[in-house]
Image 1 (cartoon, protein in one colour):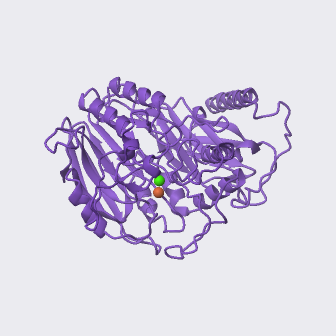
Image 2 (cartoon, rainbow, N blue to C red):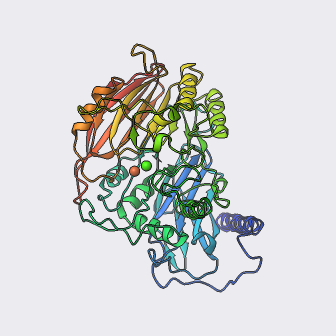
Image 3 (cartoon, rainbow, N blue to C red):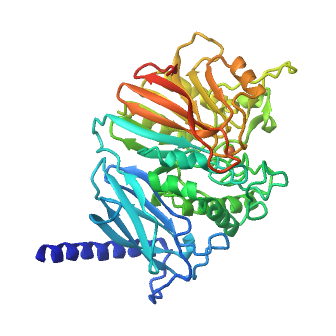
Length: 526
Ligand code: FE
Ligand code: CA
């Protein structure tokens, strides 16, 4: 009995300390008025309509996320005042073995989202988390902490995903992923699409909530629409995500301050600020990523013992405008300009320094757009064309990166890529003109969750792509995700394919597996 009282006392003290620290930090950030309305809030409708999520696992904790939104796609339905949210971490999913709890404030300035940076947990352990607010209890999420820094951990199982256009298909791939029991999920962007309701949606299964989104309210409602999907929610509840964005979180193919439609710069930067804020509000990101005006520091490293390190990249915020007028075209001289950047000088230096100093056996780049040569020449064309929104249009910086990987200062570099809505597996060389040049890394391109609809296993242009790029060993044009098993001796990538996403309940199959042996940057069909 005494023991029970003592333990509840210490939990209570920690609980108070946590909420005071949180409130003090928020007042310092200027997001919380020093005086607040403390009258209790009771939800008129269930507030946890967008589920829960965990993010950026560390050896001692992770980010636990939720957002109060009783009326999700019409602004959220919350009062314009802070609302306290209790959180709990347990060792079991019935919450009998409570490990930690505290209180966070859901602020109207952040759409009543909460991002609890849980710390003080044990490494390499499974935990469960949930939230309580206004008399309601959230769904339960599962998270696994990373191994201790420096631990020689033996195994990691993760999945990577991208591109979830809501109108193009059901998130069946996420439902299958949720059953895979992975340690973490890497999301490579296109979490939402900014478009209005498609006039010719393929097929007409479900619709966007209105016109092309520009304002903060519209971006928030769009995230709420996407996050209302039960399969996406179950994937989030199954494992922590390491998320980065691509273009559609703001606008198709935007580059830094340049909009696709060449909107005036101040106008586009205001849109970018709204989009970045809504992204922060809806993903389980650390406070270090909190946006400041139209800027947001998203690139970061996530270590996983000494087995793996993830360098999470941002290939939109700092890049030069696409060369040669964008699109798939022959490379004009602009594409070769040495001053053009994809990562920008700060991020490039940070990436190469981090890789050079990494003691991880496997070094993953959470990359958005295709890095390796991706030449296409249709039978009726007389010149080679390249997708200029990808690294194929940013040749000088790509060469610096590939040359660095060729020095072997980073052990086993593996590039994870999204964006193009097809599966590709390829070896990377620093010299594309020389077919017998040594491989310096491998690139795993994962297909979309839903974007593009059902797709075909081998469309005509898939055959042309494989034919024109001998370093490519695999192509599949259907939907799905990639599951990666990592040990100290080898990596196995399973290309998980969901042939039908335009009807609910599609099956999943492993269409192909590739193996990479430690120390040998070459994909071998498994
Ligand atoms: Fe996409
Ligand atoms: Ca994209």
